[in-house]
Amino acid sequence: MSTSAWDMSDSETLSLAMQSDEITDIADTVNLEGVWAPCLTPIHADLSIDDARLFDHVDWLLSNGCNGIVLFGTTGEAASFSATERMRALETLIARGISPSRIVVGNGFTAISDTVQVTKHAVAQGCRAVLMIPPFYFKDPTDFGLISTYRHVIDETNCPELKVLLYHFPRMSTVPISYQLIDALIESHGDVIAGLKDSTGDWESVESYIERYPDLAIFPGTDALLLKGLRAGGAGTITATADINPHGIGHVFDLWRQGEQAEKTQTRVEAIRSIVFEYPLAAALKAVHANYRSDSSWNRLRPPLVALSDADQAALMNSLEQVEFQLA
Image (cartoon, helix red, strand yellow):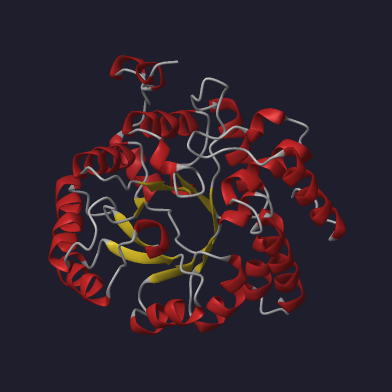
């Protein structure tokens, strides 16, 4: 199938019948804390987004322990999907009943015009929170250049209620989120800069953001640091493993919030995570759904990513069975 067939024309995208005051009311309920899943993106054999499975997956996540989802983050293969595809997927989810307040939209592109377009579109659909990775093609950009990027997107979107989560994932983007960048953005757009996702997996990095920015929602990008982060003042976690273990990870957050002991549950969460992370992540998570749901279509990824081999899938399932994993 040609790329033009994946990118629906403007006339084919869904139109939502929402009044502006209704959108504002919905957006005001967004609560950036707890467990958020950067949701997987199921696709058809022709590589187009599988709307039905995407909705079912998001609905399942929200019904089984997740406070919300990040649409088109790294786990969702965001870099493989166009602006038009992302916008259409968001419209489809909302049209089918997913509340905009439960969605953080991944709006990062190398082209700033695409980021502005997707951010404006998210706001128009009632979403107010976006996860913005810095532009990642040009290497070693200056802080001034990055500050200009974020300020331009915020100013062009022109939504006082917009909440931007900065995305610190230097291993993937090669562009770190520095203190200087955050300080400058807080100075100019303090009401908009809401928090940060730290996907380094390094506790010292996460802790430094929590301590330096106590008023921001700091999310470690790993459930392995969930309980430790919460105790230090973090907001929760935005973690890929929530795509297969929302109940377990959500239970850690609930226990902590209720003042109960969560160490045992946290240990089990980490055991499941360690198994999955022995393999390419998106492929492993999709393989879990394919096997536990007896639905091989879940194994599809957009090139250049590929599905796990049969041998790796068998080994992964065997390891999960050893810890009595259940898809919930």
